[in-house]
Amino acid sequence: MGDLGRPTSFDYIGRVSLINPLAREISAKIVYYGPGLSGKTTSLKYLYSVIKAERRGELVTLATEGDRTLFFDFLPISIERVQEMPVRLQLYTVPGQIFYAATRKLVLNGADGVVFVADSQEAARDNNRLSLQDLEDNLAEMGLDLARFPHVFQWNKRDLPTAMAVATMNAEYNHHGAPAFETCASKGTGVLQALKEISASVVRDLRRRQQGARRAPTGETQLVAEDGLTARLSAVASEAVEEATAPAAAPSLPVPTQPPPASLPARSALAGTGLSFAPLWPGDGAGVERVERHIVAREFATAVRAAAELMALLLDALPGTSGTGGPMARAALLGIDGREYLRLCRLASAPDAALTAEDALFALYLLVSARVKQQAL
Ligand SMILES: Nc1nc2c(ncn2[C@@H]2O[C@H](COP(=O)(O)OP(=O)(O)OP(=O)(O)O)[C@@H](O)[C@H]2O)c(=O)[nH]1
Ligand SMILES: [Mg+2]
Image (cartoon, rainbow, N blue to C red; front, side, top):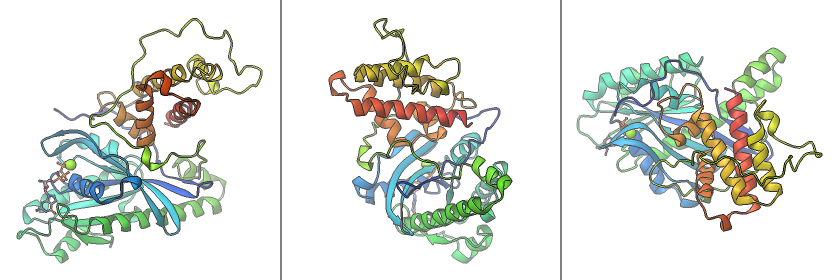
């Protein structure tokens, strides 16, 4: 398989981190970066194996060829407390092989912190350097500077006899005095410590930037807001971690084949209340209105399926991602919570009788949330 993500133009989607002031919860994206075979996927697999099931979702691995990551791995986890705040993290790995440059950019997009996994072996010296340079270049394209960007290092494969001295690695790669950990990802040594440290750095960084936003004069506040950092209220309380039941293959939503049934009420059941999400789709609000009407008519299964179809269309039309991964990958790149997307997939293929009002409202919420994110592109 070739490079899955080779968009001709790269759009910086904006950082997806948010502090939810109601839940007082932080949600952030952390990317495991580094050269091919350095141990990024192994690190995520280890985390998956040791984090309690109720605190993590499924490990989603998007396309691999043997051991090699071709698109990315994804693991959502929640941590009870980092500096007194509950934290939800979306962990991603990039494909390290040099020719997946465009894919790395897409995955890095919106990151709040990086764990750079370097291969300690002498033979990997140049690859580590090139990968670090690649990271710095990609951050620079996003207007970010590694010196001020939360990052930690894993000096991985410390178990191998050909490992370089730690002092050498620090001198060659750790130019900004970031925390560094000696790790052996295949045994798990040091991997949790590195995650803990990057989580703490990300929280500190978010707080610092949010305080900056609060204090800054209007112009600067605006800049920070465009960076996606101002607190945003989550429209619906986020779902619990036990939601995650990802199928092994990348899930997808059904693409619409049927026109809407003719039996629908002629006008929005919400008409008169003035409450509809249709204006979010200027000129084409009929789709979401259909979902709303089905909910009001208590046709919850039809509402869920209509919302899932609209979501599939929305993801399909995402700019700059043609030929990039599947819908799961696009959803992740848009900044949709992986667990929530998987829940919608699951609902869309559930039997009608199993679907409740809550499911339909959730489907509507996720669709609207995706639309808002899409409009922010
Ligand atoms: N000896 C040793 N082997 C390791 C360690 N960490 C990972 N490996 C092995 O190195 C190989 C590559 O690991 P991956 O985690 O797949 O590497 P990756 O960084 O995801 O590679 P790409 O997906 O190509 O970017 C696997 O065979 C792992 O078992 C380690 O600490 N020590
Ligand atoms: Mg990998």
